[in-house]
Image 1 (tube, rainbow, N blue to C red):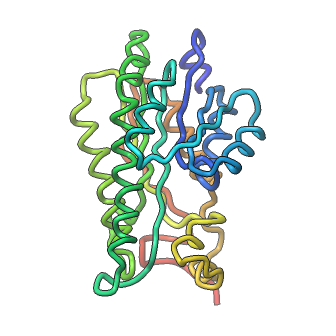
Image 2 (cartoon, one colour; image 1 turned 60 degrees about the vertical axis):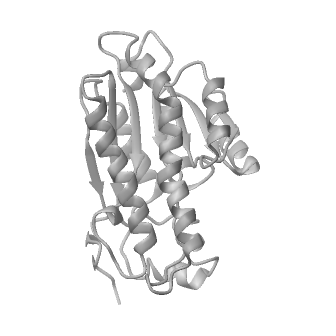
Length: 261
């Protein structure tokens, strides 16, 4: 656990996209594990509510991860960072490749890929320094990708491409940092039911969003994924969980989902 890894120092975790869903659940869980958590998101009111709920262990920071200048300023304001959870992302649109809106594809690439790049580049010096605090220390970069990164599906071209990009960042970074006191973890969730993901993808169409989960016995929840994230980042510093795929029992693959009538 966090306290077992770093009894002599307070560990700091930065969680992006922390105003709702998996990000908010992860911030709550890491705070419970003993981390000081910096919650990052664009929506001031929402992120402040989550930070207030967590209490003294949480700090809210309004930030758009696609804004490189703002990310650099944010990084400069931190005194230390032990864990970076690159959770900010999203899917926009479900049209075919032939009919997809290039602007939707651009938005997905910017947040899912360039957002990860901006945050990782800006915080890597602090993560290296955290790992160098002691012989047993390690900074941690965690990338939340998706099973979509590995399996294309109709109507998912832009999201699949973006998450494949996030997967490529994690794998490449791990190779480039080998031998340094920084580990790189990738979590790839399958079907997760949150309040906003599908609703955002379908432009606020509640019926279409609900149809994604229709008949599925217990899709994953945000708390399920947060639990997985917390487990990986609280392993002993010499343990690197390269890639962990987590799905609900009802989903065997991207296209193989058990649905009740």
